[in-house]
Amino acid sequence: MDILGQVVFNPNSKPNQPSEDQGIRDIAVALQVIGDTSLVGEVTENGIVVNTDASGNFLFTGVTAGAYRVVEAAGYSGTISETGDWTDNTSISVTPADPLITAIIGYTGDAN
Image (cartoon, rainbow, N blue to C red):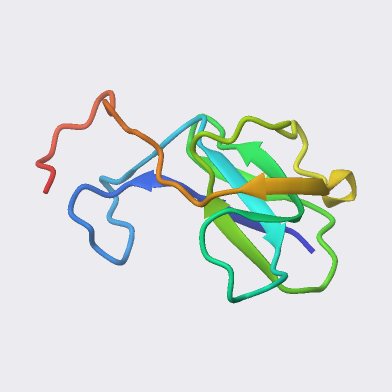
């Protein structure tokens, strides 16, 4: 199966994606096996990390059935997959973290 999504700049924190929300490129996103669900913060389990494309989209392919978490992994310093192919998964340590966004080019609305 494939797992896909988009990381967007949502200045008004609305739950549905308004048309003015823009995708954010080059955000590290991790798909990671959920092991010990009592753990909070950094988790080391099998997984794979990709960067979002120019439109903020990410894609993991060939994912086998199981329990996973998808998290933004700002500051991740390991290998970034170019393909998102699950067969390339390996043991990774990821601490879910929001990226530091300093500027969104071309946004003309108000931000909360």
